[in-house]
Structures are given as C-alpha cells and as structure tokens.
Image 1 (cartoon, helix red, strand yellow):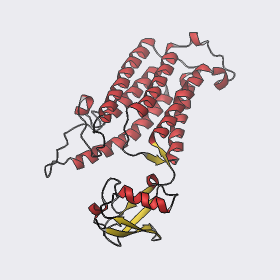
Image 2 (cartoon, one colour):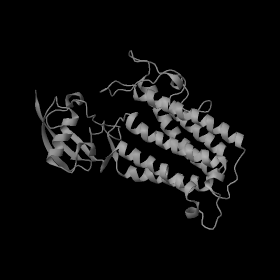
Image 3 (tube, helix red, strand yellow):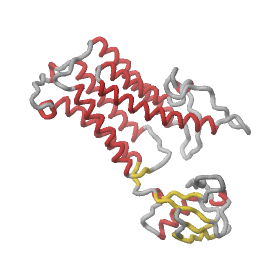
Image 4 (cartoon, one colour):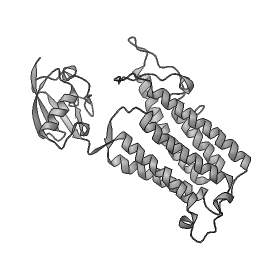
Length: 309
C-alpha cells in the first residue's frame, strides 16, 4: 500500500483539491473522496482525465473500475476534472421520452374536436382502418420501449446530463404530434386496405425482431462485465446494428402503410441518427477486434442497412 497525493485541477488550471489516496484505490473511490470534499460534485457528475500528451487534443479518460496505479499516477500527479452537469438516470430519461409519444399520438385519434376545430370527424367506429391500426401500432411500439427500458436493457452508464431529457423529449414529443396530426386528420385519404394490412403485419415482424435483438444485447455480458463483446445470433450474424435495422424497417413500413409525408420525415430523421450511431459502433468494434496479438477478428458484416450500409 502506497499513499500518494493527487492534485485535482479544472481544465483552466485552477486547483480544486489535493487528495491523499492509496495508489491501489479505484478511480471510483477517488471520485467519492472528492465528493466528500465538495458535495456538489457527486461521482456521476465527474469526469477525470490525465493531462493530454504531446500531439493529443485531450487526455485519457479515467474509468471508474480501474485502479489509479494502472494509469501510472504517483505522488503529486495531476488529474484534470470536468463537471458534467446535473445528471439523471438513463431509465428515467427513456421513460419520459417514450411515455410522451405513447400519450400524445392517441390524443389526436380520440379527440379530433380538440385538434381539428371546424372539421367534421367521423365516429371512432367509422374511421378508416389504417387510422385504427396505426394508433395501435404506435402505442405498441412505445409501450414495448418502456418495457425494454426496465426489463431488458442494460446501460453502460448509469446517468446522463439532464439537458438530454429536454432535448430527447422535444424530438419524440414533437414528432409524435406531427405524425399523429396528419394520419388522424379528418381530411386524411386512406391507402388501399390490403396494402395497409400487409405493411403493418410486416412491421410487427420488425417489432418482434427488434425485441429479440435487444434481448440478445442485454445478455451479451455476464453480470459485472464491462468489456466489449461481439454480438452473435439471429440478425447479428450479418449486421452489426441489427436492432437498428429492424427498427428502421418497421418505420419504413409504417410510412408506406399510412402514405404520409410526416411519417416519412420521422423515419428519415430516425434513420439518419441511427446510421451515425451504427457507423461509430461498427468502427469501434473493428478497432477493438483487429485480430492482432491474440485478439478476435471482427467478422465482415453490414453496418446497419444492407445492401446500402
């Protein structure tokens, strides 16, 4: 056991604290000691890094589970601190961003007198079949997401900045109202019923495929494991982000089944974001599993959307 003193500084060079720690302590323990000195900065709010080396833009981020000795920290070493801002649980963010669309969309279906003043709406029983199926599909999708948040997903991080709650909710709530307004409009012209039934039947296949992909990902690591692993089984044998593949195809079929430009824009926005995430994950897995020094070689796979990506 070796006791060392670490100099915790902000990025502008201001000294925040000098902490006496054991060099075999973990980074998580270091964060707790700083929190004991400054109650504002609880561990989830802290990001600790090493000073940037020559030629680097930023230093290495210190992982909570790693020991201080693994980073070569010694008596008097400098550790840089960044305040990540007020944090909120991932599951809380996901609940609110999914609960909104779950409630907003059916409001347009059930309360046309509120959202379409001056328009004569048909009784619920006489509405076009596509409007009834679309609202059921939409609600099933977001109810599934909430279920997965609490019973399926495992999160690599416990929290995220609270600002993400407002950003994410704005996206989901806005698009829910936008799509619902046009699909449930009294002047809406429904497409062929056979086309609608075929599209939504296939879309449900995508929903259950997406669920299976999420289940595979949730069981990828054993309890306590943090290291990256290569997903295998089902669509993951061919596609890196198969869960995104099923998600996007579900919304493409929703768009075709409803024949609305609003749904097409929602689908395109989601696909663009997922494509960016998928390319980043694909590159990361290729880099980690490069086949060198005994490491596994990442197999050749589509990124997200064969045959285009």
